[in-house]
Image (cartoon, rainbow, N blue to C red; front, side):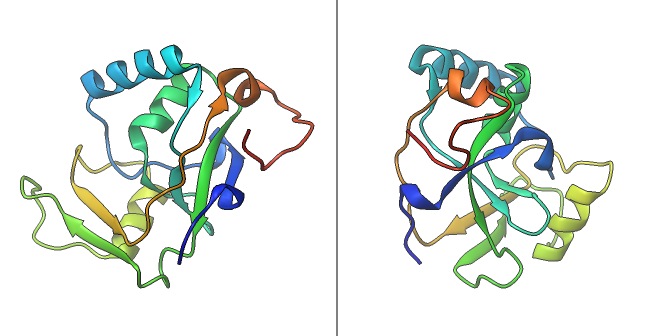
Length: 147
């Protein structure tokens, strides 16, 4: 599978669900860069059925901090897409994990510690730039498109 800008959708921030905590210091650095760039330059990756964030927890936290209405996301069929590989980071406290475990955690009221899971995706994400102004709009003139 290969992605391009047409695969990036602007989705409501509240639709997304985290499955692991973030490192606050990393989020603060990313927040400053996002403000400097005046936008997002990389989409998140999320499960299209549940909104579970697979890649982009820090970007999601930045969007929430900035009280954005929407965020750029590439949605995938996580449970059935074999090109998405799930691994544990070496420092993880877990012995094993499944894609269903990730979904279940996102749908629960709990979170894994930071850097528990790592998703390897065979294709690189397209470079984008979606302005903070555009992401703050509640009713976009053209929803689901990047600039």
